[in-house]
Image (cartoon, rainbow, N blue to C red; front, side):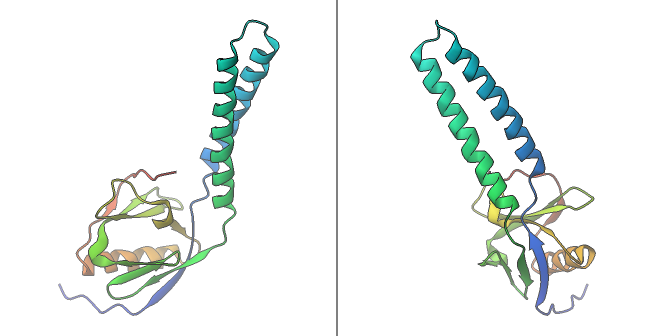
Length: 159
């Protein structure tokens, strides 16, 4: 099968919204804070339990801030060239990529899994904002041309 040479293609992309993690962590944070307030009001709670509860709330708050920050990030550009991808101010060579993964059908999330990583790094995870079908088609053609597996499969990303 003969592949046509790809020209540089630009697509507007954004980090996946993360509404589910924000909602989930918010609920856990509310439950943890309620539990800690009740423990503080109790006269028989050891001090160490209160410190652990406070540390847990601090960790959840940090995660919540990270997710909200990512959700508010401005869209960036994915540039597809012959043997490289330029994504989030990072150049990724085709020979550095183990596989491209897609999860979801409506508003799918794409992940670029590097050879040396077990998980998809957060900065290599995105969704198309415009021209989704065209972007998916060009990325799939690019992967095929560079002999990189392109799989419709769920994947794990690190925070």
